[in-house]
Image (cartoon, rainbow, N blue to C red; front, side, top):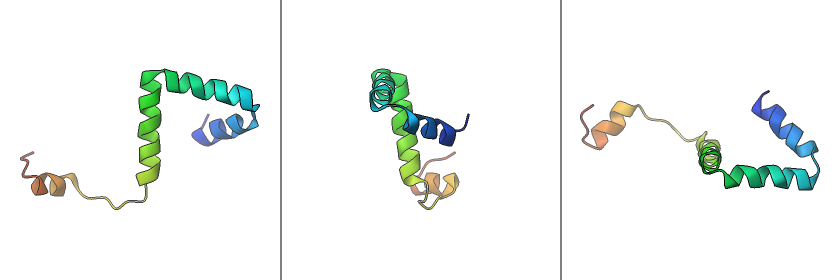
Length: 63
């Protein structure tokens, strides 16, 4: 199942069931961290990228 299919399935659920699922996700620390990571990735997906070597050079890190 793709993420898109999962989201579409969630949208079809009654509000109470959807709330129960999200409450379970938020209560689990690992899942909560994963959700935060996914939200951050989603928010930053259109930002420009830089090669890691350039970042290390700017930070004066030998890698």
